[in-house]
Length: 447
Image (cartoon, rainbow, N blue to C red; front, side, top):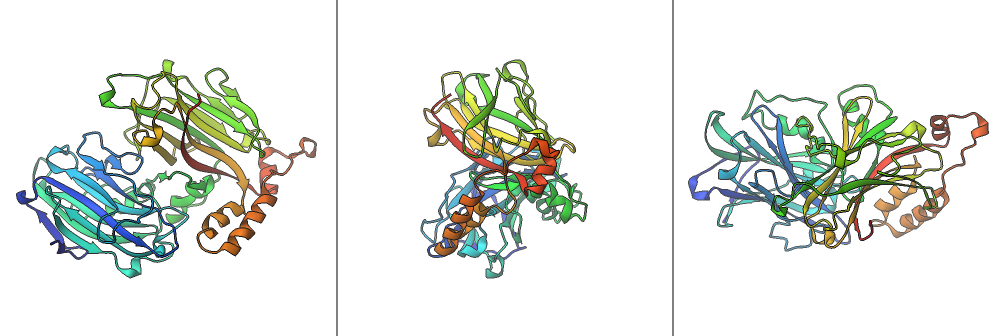
């Protein structure tokens, strides 16, 4: 029988637990509604440096001690059991990992108001329930997308830790991903680590498959929250990287980034790859076979960067609607040797991380495939009906139909008249066009 623990109440982990705990969350979705929730975990040292992050796009940390046990996209299991779990082998954690903060996250297209209940539970090495708590109803409201759920933290001094404790946090937020809650996660740990360094501007939008957002909204999220002036993104650098499985027995695979450009009717109007490294406003900076992998440990979402693409949005040909990013394995092994493929968007002017897409290659859908369509950057109407439809389709059939009809009317990009004397940015502003990014995560057979 699990002990009921209130938010802010500490629970000391004794040797009887067996050196292994499992954090889980369970939820029930309101009838006829759709909701995909995800649990995630931030691993930090005593000063607040992020050592790793575990979520649906990175299921295992580099030490092998923390593992995500699977992504549940429906929440349709038994109401009394956890829908998702993350296991932690306490004895195998690196000594510089001082704390883990677990979260529950919903995407931007939904919120926790769609749930009838949410609970959190921690189990021991024998899979017996240790502690549990329920998320209060006042936290399950519209515009609430995330909850800081649990802090698991070391006790004692950094040079001589003497044990582990945990406490439920139950702090609701409007931010939809762990990457946008980094400062808040650190603040929640100040009771245990008062010297933790907190940078209010530290964030990165972690986007799910099929989720998309305007680039300017992502860039301005922290600026506006911190009372700063908003910016307009004119250029992005796209860092592309992949991680080879340790069990694969190989150091390198022949991987390449391919960019496909399409117009508003889906016709291909250009390509950027190792044979053609540049199109108007888009430039591939190198081929992985001649570039050493680099990793920036200061980034919130760390991964090896093998290739980079710079997109100067203000110079991209007006006929281009979609810039689609593919990664292909030319080694003939598909994705069996790979752990993940990741793509990070960085604002060129400031060096600020904007978003990360992460595709876990260990899932069954990668089997036998040669290419993964990671994500895209695309032009869209500022008042696009697609996003109205995406929300309305699970709410109201009449509103959904209206949105579909509006989408059809918006399908084409407004014509660009070179003789009118407008620059590309002026044309976009006049036509009410914005740049958005979308995670795709779609595996394909072709190269």
